[in-house]
Image (cartoon, rainbow, N blue to C red; front, side, top):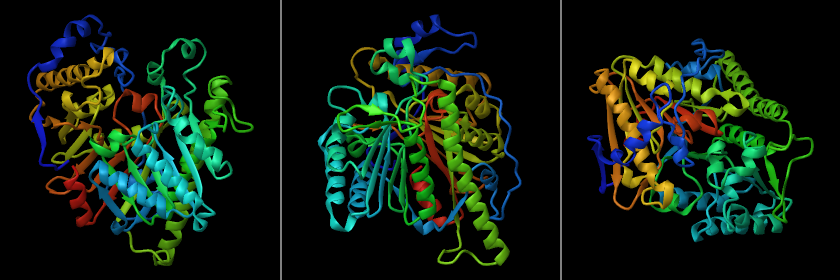
Length: 494
């Protein structure tokens, strides 16, 4: 976020919270928290911490000796060279890199996002895909796009109408999948108005994959995310195993989604339970099996590879000795998959005295469990939040215009709790402000005690809030590195 026009401001004073204070004080739940999610599609109340077992700390297969190797007991571990990792810094760089990768793709383009916008920049992306599909050199190219059904169907011109021409021209090579949460069904689906139906659950993963290159981000495929909406982006280049994993994960979610047809209708794949018309338990069980199969198969494959390498005493052929490790973290609580939550809780719990954790989110609505861990652990925290003026809902009409003030109210509730527990010296809150920009970045950086550079970062779609943990489909990576040059890149982006 190191731009000259950026100001990080210490959170202070009641500010905009006065707008909602009386309303919120009248509608608290028994735990003293406010059900603010009724104010808009992107808010939801905190809930009590979910009890979960900590993962074992002993690795199941040989690998690099770092303090986070326990994550490999839960998910596949990919050892890569730090030279394969590039941190992108600006929305425009993100957009230009994606366009360049689309033009170079030869075998697969996979894009998973909340939605595709309808402006000219988004149309340029679609046109680039079509141009690449028409190239004789790309005759084997397959394109798979995964979006959310409710968000992607909003309005007369929407993600679906943007993609229909592509689907009609290349019906055998293009797949458009629209995930529909199984929790939006029956009367709830019938009566909940557009926009508000998105509070029930979304496809929220942001995965952009081109052959063996993967970009993980929190950014959606929309013009503001390509111009003046600050987010985070990390590109893993020439990492076929990582790319295969995310290809299979997006494919698994695509299989349990509705498939867009050339006439703008949708239908399920043969043999798949319908997400909102079929049996909910059967659907969720099938979804769980499909997603966990991807995770467990990749984990088993990586363990076998690592074990063979360890026993032979030589790294796998044609690979550099890894100094960086990638752990994909998946959170799909509607299907009983909560790996990201478990890893995040453990990172917060096991943070040592003197460790510095930097956390950022565009929507400050931490779960009660995460708040309790921040307040109860020994590490120091810096939390970067969106100032109300850079919240994407600032100045919106109707009830949506109250969302920035609602988040500020939540921030002040947390800050007051810090003061009550005398924790403000250990946990610092700051606001991000940049004129004419909005802020959507989320993630975590961990600096070991006494270190000036981070050795771990989390980057992807989760916001650390109620919806990320309980309602939406989320994916990110834990990236651990021993390479100082890459650590410096991560530090500069913090």
